[in-house]
Image (cartoon, rainbow, N blue to C red):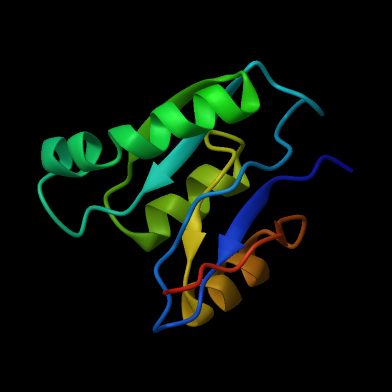
Length: 111
């Protein structure tokens, strides 16, 4: 079974993306979904340090993808259009019910 990974985050935690498996076991490019809680271009600009960090740490191309809402993020994860996503507790339950093959693998923490 192919597995896609995502991040489950608590309601009070800040989400930090971590990479997981996608359509292939070790894809050259990872697509990281961002939820549009602000202007998409601002969101992508603010996520650039994270993208740079992940590219250096993982030695992979990172593509930032802005979804329209949690439903779109769940569907993108379900159909392999993204490899990494942030989910809170409730959205995780929804995602898991629609795409049982996804697995949580990290939890964000706030310091």
